[in-house]
Length: 118
Ligand code: 5GP
Ligand code: ZN
Image (cartoon, rainbow, N blue to C red):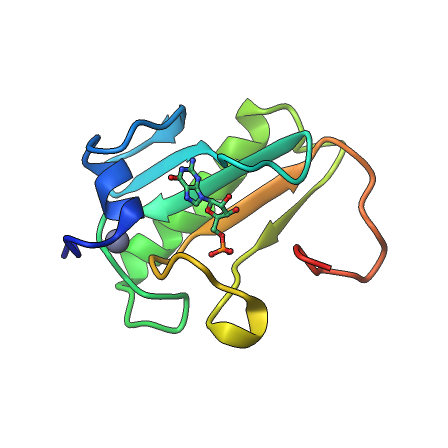
């Protein structure tokens, strides 16, 4: 369930410090270290899965998405608007191979351009 070399597993276990935004039994959310928007939070399952196309149990997948919504509410961007991004593998520039949802908001984003790293 954990990968000893994975930085997000280490963050979940508290071995690497992070700024917690939200936590539930199966999910942890924390501030991105290199924010690209006024609000930029990462939501991860506590268990290690490589990406969104990995075999993630239904209850953990649901918890991940529910947490993303909860983070948006906690950050006060649920009404103004926000974007969820889940980079997956090389074409999408996934750099940390522990599935994570970027919660992005707090400023106007480009219409129809979901790119996080343009
Ligand atoms: P990806 O490119 O895989 O979609 O996103 C990885 C994200 O993790 C990047 O936005 C990067 O800033 C963030 N990140 C990488 N290492 C750390 C870390 O040690 N702590 C935190 N808080 N964020 C990190
Ligand atoms: Zn991991």
